[in-house]
Length: 353
Image (cartoon, rainbow, N blue to C red):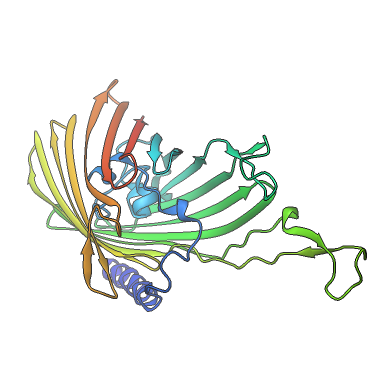
C-alpha cells in the first residue's frame, strides 16, 4: 500500500508540473526570449550519443543533468565525473561532478560547470575595431542533487542550481530547480522516466557599467550632466519537461541491447522527439546512436539538421575498464552533427570506487 501511495503521489506531482509547463508553452512569440541558455548544454557523453533519449535509464553523475532520479543508481559508493566539450561558436564547457551513496539516506551529488568564451575585444562607438582591451565573460552553474530509491521500483531525485553570469562589470544570478522520477517494470527491462528542468527565478543583469552621465533634456547647453541608469528587462529560465521510455530488448550476461525514446517539451523553443539505442558487450564496450526531430508547435512542422533546428544525428562509444575489484574507470565519447558550426563533441571521464 505504501508503495502504491508513493507512486500515486509522485505521478500526481509530475502530472501537475507537466500540465503547468504545457500551459506555459512556447509560441513563436516566446521563442528565443529565455536567458541562461547554458542550462541547456548537455552533460554526459553516454546519453548525448543516444540523442538525449534515455531519461528513463540514465544513471550516475550525468543523471544530475538529464534526470536527477538516476543519481542513486550508481554501482559504487562514490563516483566522480569530468567532462570537456567543444560547444558551438568556439565555446568550451568544463564540467565536474561527484556523487556518494549515503546508505538508507540516499545519494548526494555536487557538480560545477563553467563556460570558456575566450578573450573578447572591447569595442566602442569611437573604436569599432577594438580599444586594445579584452574581457572574458564568466558563466558558472553550481548544482546540489539528492536522489533516493523510494521503493525497489521507484527512484526520485531533485536538484537545486545556483546560476551566475557576469559580463565585464554586469552580473546576474538565479536559482533553478530540477526534479525527476524513474519507474521500473517487467523485471527492470522496461523503464519510465519523467523529468522537469530549469524551473526557477527570473534573472536580470545589473552593474555599474549601466550607469551613464547625460545632460538632462531641456537644459541650457553646457549644463552639468547627471547620472542615469539604464534599466534592463528580466528574463525567464528555459524550463523543460520530458517523458521517456527505455527497454532492454536483449539482456544477457554478455550482451545488453537497449532502445529508448522520449518527448521533450520546451517553453521557449521547439518540442523534440528523441530516439536512441545502446549496445553493450561484456559490460566493457558500448556503441550508441541517436536521432532527434524538432517540431514547431505552431506550424506542426518537423526539423533536423536545418536552419530552424541545427542539431542532427549523434553517435558515440564507451569503454569501462576495471582497475580492480571495486574500482572502475569509464571513458565515453559522443559526436553530434550540427549545421553551420563545427560538429558537437563531448568527452567524459568517470571513476567509480
